[in-house]
Amino acid sequence: MITMKEFMELVDYKITEGNDYGWNCYGNYAYSLDSWNGIHGDGGYSFTIVFSTKSQRVFEVCVHDYTNNRAYRMIAKNKQEKHSQEAKQRGVNLNEAWELDDGTPVEYTDLELLEDFMEKARSIKEGKTYDTGVLVPLDLSDEMLLQAALEAHKRGITLNAYVNLALADLVERVKNGEISKQDFIKSEDC
Image 1: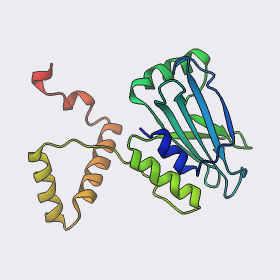
Image 2: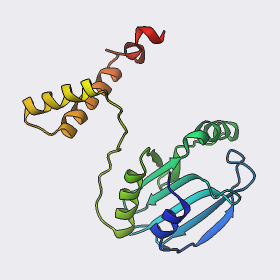
Image 3: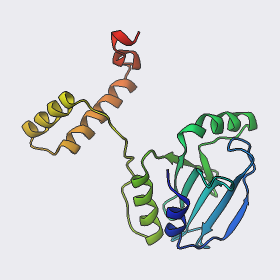
């Protein structure tokens, strides 16, 4: 998760608003800071961080790209369930960042890796194009990594490209009902 220092540097120490965080999921000391460049349309962006005023621990960080109508966020792993439960209790769609003038919702894309968030946030701030794909951490055994590397070499593509193809194929097979989560559970785990 991002630190307060990293966030402040990202926004060039420009804070435009701050408030007590209105929900209970992050505890009694949750506070929200925003940094907005003042533009809602083309060229507009804002950043939000929710943290503890007591421990300085960060619970959530968001970036809103008003130019491309995209929103990205990271929620601390140990707070995701509480956040989700409170959203249900409040009857709030926790995935909706904002609504466009025509009523179309702009949904959050949840990110897992800080480097993915930072790359997108910096690009949004600088008005640059950026990769809208989501980086995901993978923990592959040495044997599986070697097998993937050999297969990538056979196909004449990079290991990263091969892993992306394999994951896309896996997602498609799950969507089509060909495989399920149960297919990946080892028999000794049952």
